[in-house]
Length: 101
Image (cartoon, rainbow, N blue to C red; front, side, top):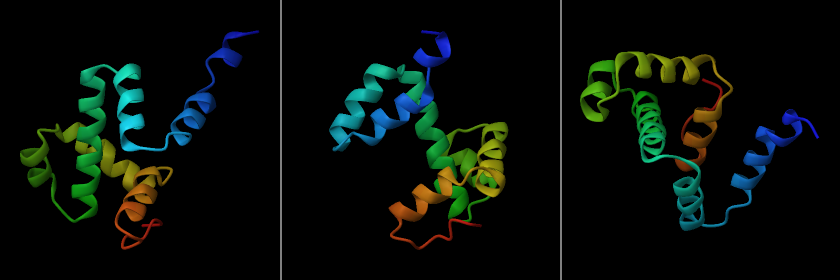
């Protein structure tokens, strides 16, 4: 078995999709990630929500403490990425956001 068979991100994605509760998700991420990694992921998600709601970079920076580089990266993903942020934000908002923006 080669390293690519063992280190397959699809396995991780399937594991995440198998979670049934917020508590299960929290437990997995607590085991899988460092506290800093969870904080960074949480910050990026907060940045995405604020940008999607129309906040400007200065407002996002002040509210989240994110650098302009992080805000720019998240904004680029919102505009030109794989629609990961857009899809989940639409789902969480009950379909209010257009996932193809």
